Amino acid sequence: MNVISIEDAVIGYGAQAVQSGIRAEIRQGEIFAIVGDSGSGKSTLLRTMIGLMPAQSGRIVFHGAPSFGVLFQNGALWTSMTVLENVMLPMDLQGDLPPAARRALARFKLALVGLAGDEERYPSSLSGGMRKRAALARALALDPRVLFLDEPSAGLDPLASRRLDELVLSLRDGLGITVVLVTHELDSLYRIADRMMFLDGETHRPVALGAPAELARSAESAKVRDFLSRAAR
Amino acid sequence: MDALLKSEAGQLVVAIPENGIDTAWLAQPLAELGLTSGRPFSRLRVESPSTWRWKTPDAAFLARLLRELDAAGNRIAVDGLPRELEKLLALARGGAPAAAPHFPRQPGLRERAGLRALTVADNVWAFIALLGEVALLVPRFFAGRAKVRRAELLEVLAESSSRALGIVAVTNLLMGAILAFVGAVQLKAFDAGIYVADLVGIASARELTPILVAIVLAGRTGASFAARIATMQGNEEVDALTALGVSAAEFLVLPRVVALALLMPLLYVYGCAFALAGGMAVSMQVLDVSAAAYAAQTQNAIGHAHFVIGALKALAFGGLVALLGCHYGLRAARSAAGVGAATTSAVVSSIVGVIALDAVFALCANALKV
Image 1 (cartoon, one colour):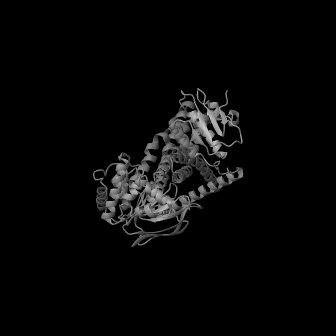
Image 2 (cartoon, one colour; image 1 turned 90 degrees about the vertical axis):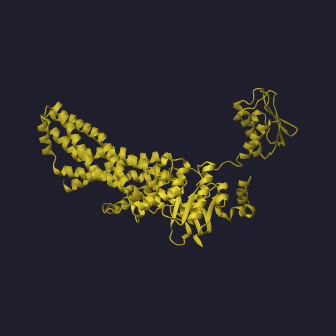
Image 3 (tube, one colour; image 1 turned 135 degrees about the vertical axis):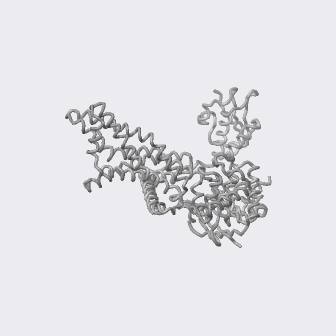
């Protein structure tokens, strides 16, 4: 079953198109990676998918209610709030749960990401990996059907990056959510992504769609094969 | 100087002197160093003394030589170089641009003026849109239905009130004292020294205290709003709110505008008290007027209308300062420099905006004869 359909979307800033002809069906429960050169429009596509900017043409359709959480590249935790308040805020803003229930649910989400006991800390006192996990807990606050992750490994050491990948896999398996991931980390891509789409920064079009290992062997584009084979070297 | 560059049987020879390449040769035309033009070369040989230890100028010179030879259509092999220098030159040669880099044409004066005008128009339009959005949200705020964090509102109230009391008191006290000094010198000559109380009272209550408090808050609170929101913008915190379906105007701007608009009239009354006290202190010293006589004269001079106008101005200035601070914060570039630029723009625009709005008040008051 598809969760999101990208129908011939053109994305960009102002009048300038960054990518065009984007077509993809994102399936329920898969980890779908958006990969490409620097400046090829990976994050722009993610920002368009979550509604922060409009598509220049084409459509991005959520099948069913558009329920999603987002892990931004820098975590984007609200620095004036504790970790617990950060996770509670999305529920506070919805306002359909009593405060005690919101608090309990937020504690549960923090426990899921391994931050039980750190609820009253402020983001500034957390390590980079902990901030990302706290932001992940916040992204899960409203039990989304789709989780968008923008460069989750950015700024993390390899160990923290691996732990975050394992956490994403566990959450996908445990919660049955769909994950859309923007990344340029090949190790991470091979570790967790079921399928990927490669955005070419030179032709401004997607040039490959499929499972990473399969594309590494048989992608039509030599650029994609070369890109994907670098991880194995 | 012996020729640095020589040609021998289709080879170009670089004869490195004992002390290596002189840095002056890095910019000197190759023809002056011995390169004969028009002759194709298939090989470059570097001859160096046995004691030669290559340094950066040597590498830079050889890289430049190879680049110019490549550009002239010679793709030549190089002999006689230490291995690490060979690698370095291969790197420099591979990275050399094939053609002159293309720089976009710089816009002319008229184009720059046009672009600037478009930016200003866009900025004004965005400010009007934000003003409209906040105006529509104000009733929701007072009905208790706005998506606003109480803790955030209290923090803004504290930031804009108790922490600003000292500076508001000092500036107004000094302003009242200065007005009294200036007035005393002039009015004393006409034996009308007691009218200093009228001068200080009316000028403070109607014009100067609202403006002074607004300028103080523009530099203090408006700048802090701009910096805070611009930083949030850079950290994607505003995006995180938007992704939750919460409008930044509602969650971030509304509490700040309401807090400052409500606090400003209170700060205005507080500032007025200090301005009058400053005037009284100077009058008692310079004009030998008693405190009771000064207070009575002030009471006679200041009518309700002056206070009402002053308080209305304070309310409007407070809203304007907060709105401009938030507006520039939301439009800030996502960088550290963007935070600085947003703060500066917020303060400058607030000061100009407050004075312009004061002029509008003056016109309205004149038309209404109050």
